[in-house]
Length: 303
Image 1 (cartoon, one colour):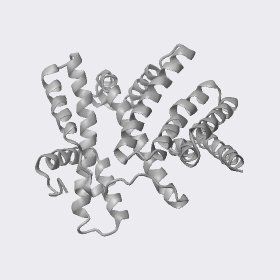
Image 2 (cartoon, one colour; image 1 turned 180 degrees about the horizontal axis):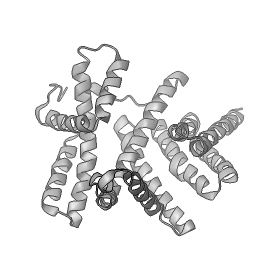
Image 3 (cartoon, helix red, strand yellow; image 1 turned 135 degrees about the vertical axis):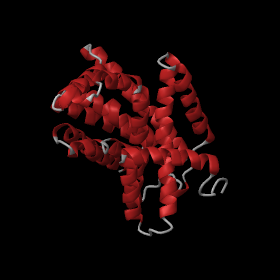
Image 4 (cartoon, helix red, strand yellow; image 1 turned 90 degrees about the vertical axis):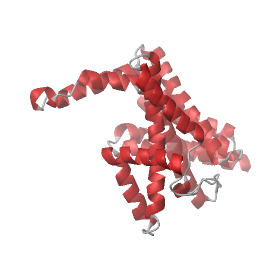
């Protein structure tokens, strides 16, 4: 009976994975949002049953994607999405805490992206990152051609060079985002299915570990004294990653203080997200996070 139930659930969740993934390919805009749901069915199957059931469903889903969309799409489905669902489901099932789940699965997400790039390169003989960057550079040139005076004085080559330099930081930030988003969505769905996820601290009490501050300081030093050297590039990537993390801490500080006056969590979240998405305000938020680390603006350190 147990075997039959796991098989039925596996078949259903594998089909759901296929629907999410194929939608991410063929449906504009909405498909991009649905792509973030791809790891969830395999994650829940692994939590409810075991790694074997999750792996089998992931392989079946990838095979069906292969039939409809080809080998590269099947590889992307398995390596890029379902593999993260497998490992996240396993870490949650084994009782890892929030920090452990996020840390391990961020590394898994980074590894899966790098592995996928390597596999595509072996199969097609082309680096997908280089192709994407070239496409982005061409798009920038065409877009700026509509502006007078050669794009308003914007140096496309410099932008492309900058994007090349910060690729490691971009991969890390994207992987962290994937992991956190899947955990939050999974936790929200899990409450309705009576599946326990490790508790995570309230957002208004978020505090980064001390190592993040020292990485932030080291990044600035490398940028200031390293210039265009190898160490300067490392510093640039460190600075980008840590500034994004301090942006989150700054948003937590704003959430904390606005929460004293705005009782609706919905509107509070909307306001903080809006502020974080504004270029100038997001920079200010990032520095608020740094000052909070240094001066404990919320007076909550150690509680």
